[in-house]
Length: 323
Image 1 (tube, one colour):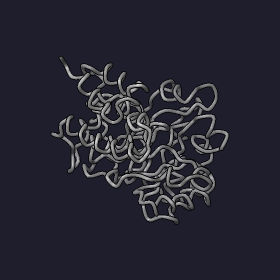
Image 2 (image 1 turned 135 degrees about the horizontal axis):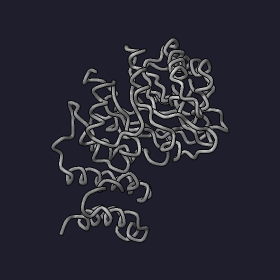
Image 3 (image 1 turned 90 degrees about the vertical axis):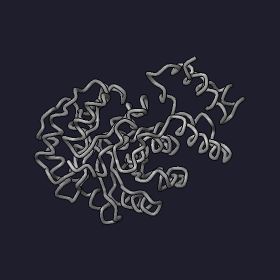
């Protein structure tokens, strides 16, 4: 796999996690990683506050907009909006199994309608000049046939899609919560590797069950890249360990990251962003290290946040340092 792959290290779209503030923090840790927005539905963009959904800091590049929807015309219009806003990629969600997306007939439900997804991909490709990519599962419910995902990817490949981010589990649409869908269906990493063999000139990115540094590095070599989800949220240091791009943050001290993020927090807080929103993405930063509990406790305490403002970051850092 070429080490220059733009998808070598990605951070997954996570609802209520990967907002612009969390992405800014992740960018400090991993200057070469590819970042993704939370899933944003076409309805939210067509009928809501566009700036609230699409604004981001220029330092976040490369950053991808993930869309949720199933109407080719609406998706094309939203893709154009995302491109005008400056996003480097438009990604279609075909993997979320929540009740909300099932009611809207998009997300993982779309895997049952590959021809419709191909129409959506074509419409978005005609609308923008950046990559249109798809994030998907390996199957639906309890059918673990490799043929299903091979045929799904093949249909989209014929439509011109060349980047596939595969969450290496099925999506069980009835009976499992979104959290259970990230844990209960068995991982099938080998089937993602089969996709690469069957579609050698496509970019195949592995998502799901990646928590160990050595395992992550192995798959980064075997495929075109990996995408970290909860592991990047709960253990952000993984990003710094795995980022090996030309602008890698290796050698940047934790204190330097803290200083840069504190400066950002001050600006955003002065502009009216609530502090608890700004620090939400960094709660796991000291996980597995001394002082992790004190760090998380202080940054989660509404009274401390109100009393100290952005300076609570320095307080939490000092409290977490070994005595």
